[in-house]
Image (cartoon, helix red, strand yellow):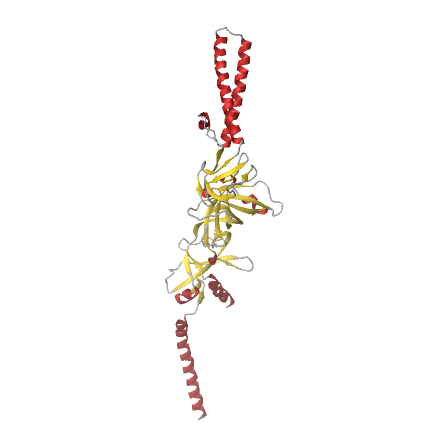
Length: 389
């Protein structure tokens, strides 16, 4: 009886072992676990999708070393003007309002002073005097040419002529500076009221005049700004100065919003360092059209130095270990195959910009290699599991 029981138990154990051996391969297929072979890290499509692996290749990307800078939209000195009177006077009329666009030479206001009459009288006096002396000079020139008068008399007349001409030129310049129409004065039309005109085209930014006020030369009455050629003015720290060159590309955004970048190019830079902030001023010409720019708007900018087309991958494609080893993963299999083998490859990295990093593979990749552009940390964890086995 005991022999029969041992026989039955032995047969039962054997059947259990055979059944377990029979079911083991099916469990592997059902769970679709990761297998590691001498061909690389083998992942099923299930695992590839779960890891978020995206396939791609190394591509040429415009990359640079970026110098971060902050600044503002500004107007160059030649594009803004303070308008004041050349001689003191009382404001009679104002023709423009703040925010109004004006053209160069357009009348801004009129003002008057009794001295304006003296300036015009002085011009008329010098003009009449010159006309008389000029006739005498022309007559003496003919006489000396015919040896009718002496050279000495002619020289005296010529000296008087040159002096009268200089006086007339000065009187004409005084009229022009004052803004008086010389042609009207020549016709005998004298005025006590002259116009104050815009020296440049632009927007009237400030009006500091009022009717009846007395204006003097030290008092700006109008401020005009030309907004057609605004510039980007940023500050660069002393350590970055050697990297900055004219012609370099600049990208900038407003209020720190980097989602909408605009372009400019370095036009000039200062020659001295601010002793307080240890910075230098860089001026860039704005290339992006259609921007609603206002002087004084704050901007954050990147100056792209050493810019060039380089082999690059997304930053997400590169693993950086604590020991500074840098690597990625590639496959030569069909990315849509039921299972795909991945291989590790080491790289050297360089410039990083806008999510891309320049790379130089330390081993030659197969021509048909497809690189994992994302999901690499999942691949790394599977690689470490393989090494621990």
